[in-house]
Length: 391
Image (cartoon, rainbow, N blue to C red; front, side):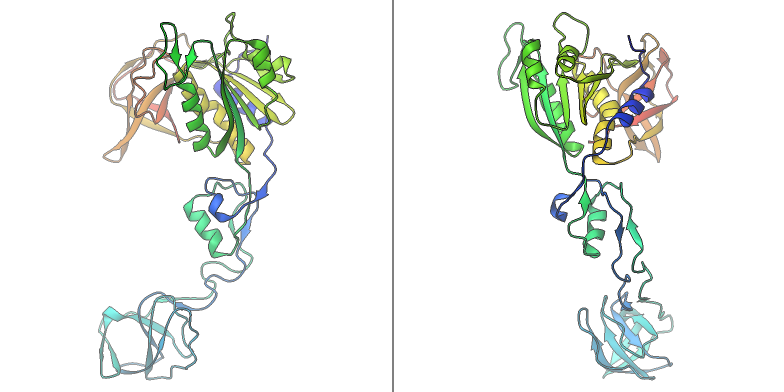
């Protein structure tokens, strides 16, 4: 039997086993949340020419009252030269005319009868010089960066309209158990609404993946094994991770040719988490309880999404002040306690959410973190590490 892995060891194992998906070129309209797989460089100086940073007046060297000789507008190259003793009306983003040394804000000057007089506090440092932001060839975005609105705007500004990115991870998900029914149905005396399928779909989509197949499968090892032929990058099985008579997840993976990487993690909740590989295809069998799902998806399985996307696995941890004491209990395992972190007077403060059992999801509203601990009691006011949940 393989030794039980710690949380860090399980994450390291997943990161080492999974290789990034082959990159593709995609239009900017479809790359939000994707990981850039090439360096993005400036194709020309930024700005490409000297331009005005303000609406105002472009002034030639000299002092006192200046004659207005023209107007410079964005998108129109000025065809005139501003001589000493002259100025030109100019607007934000317009190219600086020849002969100009300064731009003054319109609020700092007085204009009358075709003449402009600078005020006593007029400043002329409102010119954005050619190349002051970047020079042609400068790297503006590094490969491996996840693309958000700001990065996509920058790509558009340099004309990289089809960047090389990681494609969306294709996920197949099977929820196991004869007791499961569709959430729209009223379960029978021994039935249970399938909440894990909705939970998994939401997690996958928030982490840049695409659910290409999702089904409920009864407690049938042969049927589940046949489902392992699904065409996907990542296979997720809800339930069947433990050692009960009807826990077929690990068996189905092995029969389907997957090689077991680890069968459990020293974690509470989430101990019976299974990770396996078949070539470049990864698979997890998730402990069936909803809270266990939340914990292992966000703190362990998320590594697979990062690696498939070509990003370095990372998580965000803050040390927050505990608002009220909690009795963690447990058996010495690394515990992930559901929690809500917020900023209070500039300081992170954490509230432990109600946790009656791993099957109880009623207290999870507002969950945005897990308190990580391995002691039976945490005192009020203690600073505790909190793994932040994203998506």
